[in-house]
Image: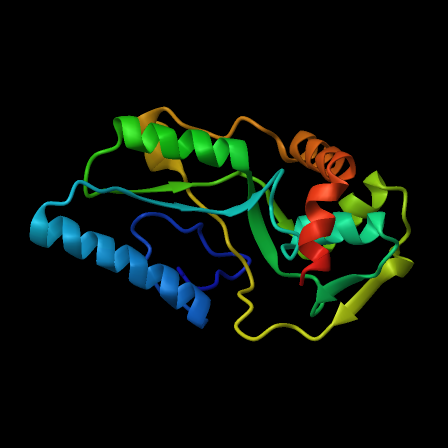
Length: 198
């Protein structure tokens, strides 16, 4: 909902103006504005959290990391958008959950807090990490047309949460990805039901 960053731009922060480029991101921006309006008009006690891309167990398999893990388990191709250069900052879901809890417990009503994983990686880099972890070669990558409104780069400056709440990500991406892959290997019944119903 913040829009798209160039490779040499500073990370998004709580002061970054919203600049959604797709209906999906516009809906997220609209929900934040609605919460702020209720806070200002009616005094509704509320905080807002914005975060970078989540990964971890129980993520639906249409998202990049679980899709690629589950496709490889099923010996399917990996549909990589565009040239694979799009960059996202990745945060493990447990770090995100811990951040939300700290915002609820310690955050100031009416304030917004950004939570980032300090782990920027291109989609192609993510793909290669998953391939390597599952001992597959790059022949399974299938380049597909880029999706409309696909932002180039996301990065989050979480210094406000770090200074004000004492929060920072604890799970490094390498360990988090390894644990995530193992979870999808060990819980195939869960995600196969979802994939087979779509």
